[in-house]
Length: 110
Image (cartoon, rainbow, N blue to C red):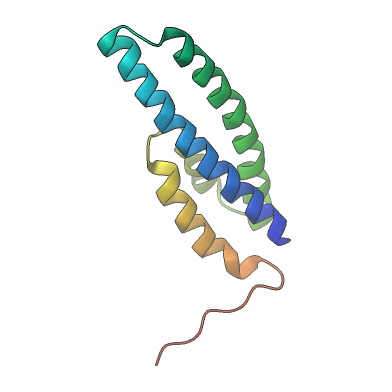
């Protein structure tokens, strides 16, 4: 598997996770303080488009890594749960890095 597949996934995982946190903050201001309705709308639209791109890249990585359906579903859904994408991304990278062509193997600890 090419390293660009993993890199695309990682970038979109971080972008999606950050945008979801921004969206949650906007929702707090919109419903808690009755302000920022236009900003919330814009952020929600941007997050939606970026999440679709994240889905495409995560599905591409999952199909190339031959993940079972349950794992693929969890990775796809993690972009909708605040903070989950950060943790899932780290786990996915740790598991997928050995599959990347040209990756350095982890040093063996004695």
